[in-house]
Length: 250
Image (cartoon, rainbow, N blue to C red; front, side, top):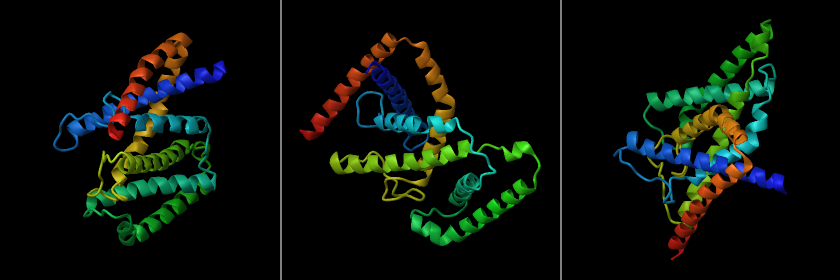
């Protein structure tokens, strides 16, 4: 029981850290990137936390941390196919976004550029496969594709979380925190290409760069210190959330 409680406290602290990072990201993004460039308290809470980021990153950590430690060599045809398709699609679609008139609908995108996307994926996969089959370079054959595969999984999970979060906030709280109607490749104004791509890049960076530092910090802290920090952060956040829900119901 004590072990489970310790793990819960650690998970909660990770949740809080990323909820704060997410809030900072959103506030700075609105101030310096999005017009009219104003300081805006993003999210539904009063405090500096965005739970969707905390929940999303905690979920990614729980699901992917062990997988990140494994190797997925490029010689495995399945890993190679998935990784190259992810990489090529990312590059191809980003080029389309910045070199053509904006396409807001996913269906229109595939109608206009779907064939080109398929062809470029086939060409890239064929060329890389030929190079690997003929190469005697051991480093090349042992090339690890894990980070690209993790990037893809984060992309999918982050997109699903964003879509569901928008749906729930819209349907049950009647709050629209973002609207992607006029953005490239949006789906029902809830998700779009840029946001999903940025979340995938950010999530990969946080898991590979920030999370190891957080793990070291949690090892340094004593159990009573973790508990104290969790209570200091948890009580105001829970009060904030409950107050917000009550106000919405009233």
